[in-house]
Length: 161
Image (tube, rainbow, N blue to C red):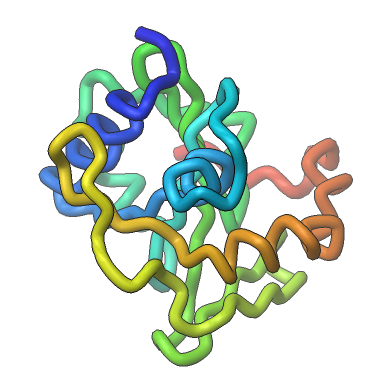
């Protein structure tokens, strides 16, 4: 199955039904909200709000079609494959008024409030939560401040349990 809007809806709905609420982010969110023109997508980016990944990690082990990608297990991120597509979740912590991601555990990134688009967006018949256009634009402009070069540092990986 290609990386399509239908797959975005299936992933978000399957996670929601398993008790994990995620919000569509990145290129798919930009396309859905009209921030950028439709294009091909290499992955599906999601935001996950919580204090840590404990609930997500437990749920992921119980979903047979979702296989964790251990090479992308960081303090601020998890990744899994679903029908050949890599899906990445970025952790957003803190109160709704001041959502923050601690990239690598030590690089704070402040999201705009509200974090999310004002209403759910229907994608292939499913109501899906999407990150706000303001946050999508801000993140794209400031992505380098999150120190993406650290992806290559083996010490940044969290132990795989």
